[in-house]
Length: 191
Image (cartoon, rainbow, N blue to C red):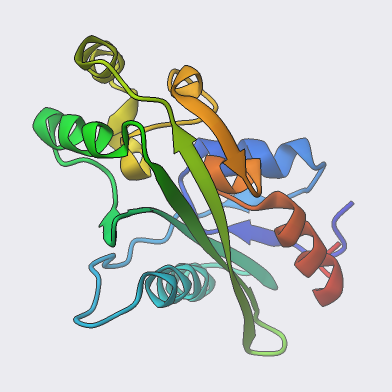
C-alpha cells in the first residue's frame, strides 16, 4: 500500500497496531523529546507541538520521506492528564474521571522531508466514564495497565468496561485517529 517509506516516531504498540490494521507499511523509530508543557501553552497547541517535534526528531536520525509523530492527552476539568507517575497518581486520575465526561486529544504530524513541511492536526473525542468504585480502580491499577497511558487508562484493554460511551473517534482514544491519519497520508502521496 505504501509508495514511500513511512516512519512512525513512536514506541506505542497501540499506534503500530492501528497502522498495521489499515494495511500501512511502516517502520518504527521512537523519538525522544522533552514532553513538558510550556508555560501558557494550550492543550491542543501542546499535542501539536509534541507531535511535530517527534516527527522531525525521527527525521534527523534516519532515511525516509514521511515521518508520523503523535501525542495523546486526556483533558478533564482543564487538567492535562499524561501518564501517571505512580500508583497514587493513577488512583487520583481515575477517581477524577469517574462519572464525568472528559476529552481525549491526539495531535498528529506528518513531516514530509522532501517538501520540508509538516501537516499537523488535532482530533478530539469526548469519553464518558461510568461512576467507578474504589475496588474497580484498585483492581485496574493492579494490572499495571495505567502506567504507560495518558489519563491512566486504555479503552481497548482492561478499562473498556469503565467507558459508558464516546462521542468521536474510537481510534483517537486508543492513541491515533486512524481515519484522519490515513486521509492525510493519501493527500500527501504517502499511500
